[in-house]
Length: 304
Ligand SMILES: C[S@@+](CC[C@H](N)C(=O)[O-])C[C@H]1O[C@@H](n2cnc3c(N)ncnc32)[C@H](O)[C@@H]1O
Image (cartoon, rainbow, N blue to C red; front, top):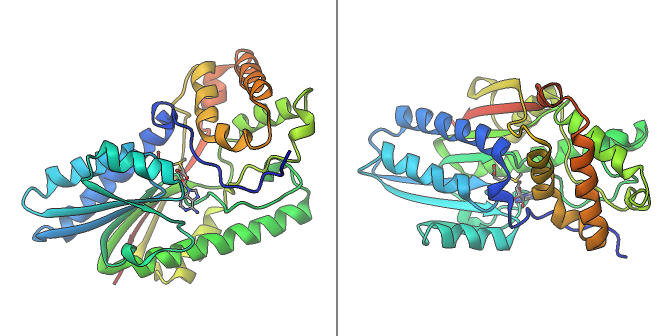
């Protein structure tokens, strides 16, 4: 089997199994609209971009919120994502009222320029495909982890520079993604399963491409990207996993991992993996397991 070096697309069922992303994504939309109504009250034309929009269920909610709050403005909203399939889904589900941009947030195309509002939810901690010696960065040895962290810091700075460059002067952004300590309990369960037969042999071939940086590194990356301190507000907090049953937690993990894992695991083994995950989650104390699982990083920015 080929080594896993490709992007992890979200599965076709992502929009139906991403309640945790929706919980925080709705907060991102609310924050963005609150900021925008203060800054762009008299604007007749609003250009906005949702970065790492996935299948666009939240982008569509953002469109409705903008239309409701700016009834006399024309809204020019785009969603940007690596995954062409999901971008097409966004355009179709919005009946072409939202434009789709298939691109990486590490390399913005010209049509991303001159935005009044940029939002992004649960995307900017995703790394480009990168080969490591283990399934997940928490289980790398110190030297390899340090290297990966440096890579992740550099990547975040690149993405934030692109966001800075895409904003008009006076533009605003609300970005949200995870920071250090996020999803530890979930990854413990996933890792333990990957240490079992018949999954063990895949644990080095699968590299789940995310990194949860410390908040301090995120703050530094924002500065390096061009945002002065007085234009940055970071609210970081813990939040419970919204999913509250073994099947819902398994489906959440399946939604973000199935396409990636299936590059390496055979379909039957993959089904066994998710069945084993649900079985193991039946043994955990669910309220304890879910508690404070997410480390949210809600970042409000404006460009002078
Ligand atoms: C967890 S989903 C979040 C989707 C949506 N924003 C939400 O909150 O439901 C992460 C998304 O980031 C996208 N993504 C990851 N790396 C990317 C990159 N370098 N450029 C653009 N999109 C990327 C994935 O394709 C995926 O759709």
